[in-house]
Image (cartoon, rainbow, N blue to C red; front, side, top):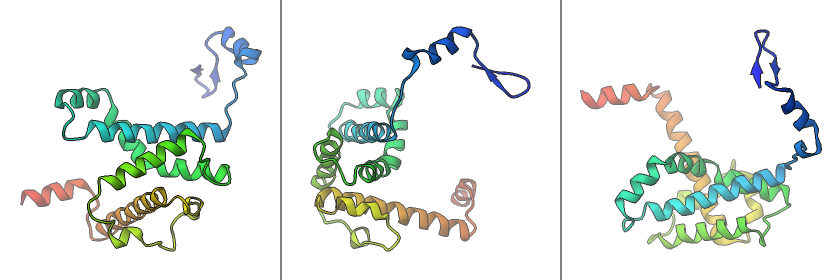
Length: 182
């Protein structure tokens, strides 16, 4: 594709248009499949990251993985894994317990729980009134449900803290950096 001066787009070569209009070019991906694939990738990335960031993992291999971009995917996966799980469950009228996604998500929740010595703090386990109603679809899967709820509560608290910081005049990282130098 190329953008023309008049802000329209055109195919660079006529063969591209022919391919897209042919039977070979008719690739269709449903929303449900796309969400399931994104969810699976996000949860798999988080499981891999748990291995990479363990204390007993080789430091040079960890650095190599970071250079290759694992950290960028980790940030994305951390932000969106629950949304993808909730969306997938909503499109399927509940989590598909026979899916690879459910098995991976349950394993991730188990790993989160197994690494915890103390129970989750009370503020992360209560059900706030504004929490996503799709979370109820997971209520019978206790460990996964509790980890998802804690993560959503944590995210809500972080957003609240950021908002409070902004209201107190801390509108940028620069202000933090300057205040720490003084």
